[in-house]
Length: 263
Figure 1: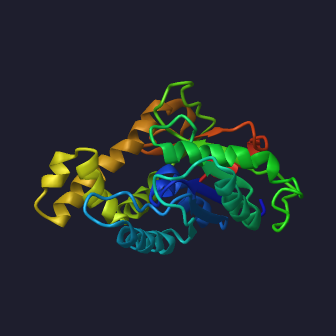
Figure 2: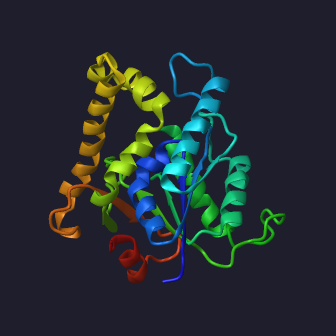
């Protein structure tokens, strides 16, 4: 198969790593291109830092992941917490999509707890048809093919539960995937233990102990996905990522599924 371009559109720095860090690493091993795009600068995700300082810190964290995963990483200049399915934000995202010309886009579902996540998923959906309309955003050449659009796994059920169209074993890259997630130290060592009430991690006396507890927690998140879809995964799979195909994009082909899932 010719090299493909996988573009992951998340709402915040650290979302792409969580959504499909395993897929990104496996696809890079096969020679495919992977780009991470975030719809906001992540500047609201802290209880002690100011926005400007946090945005700069999160950009440095994303750069660490870019090097670790060997992916391109683009952060749109939209303040965290202020992403909307607006015409302005649609045009900003469309410019990135058209310039990248991806074969596959992966994003959030629109039924999600976070308003930025919902807006991000909606913006991708809103871009789908217009990607090939030359008189929309004419300063950026339109695309002559529609990418496959996938949503990453979540546990939300209203209005509809997640449907696993692609299930991927990620055991062999889990250590690196989680290293990338935890490279966002401002989030996992500081903000999330405070915001999401992780008292054991917040109270851990050393950085090393926090790391041990965080790795245990994060590995379990993706073990849960593997346990949910045992019939869709190779026997003995310990960790998995799963994706749902969005009908606004191109059809999901057997060849693409095979390329994504066969290690």
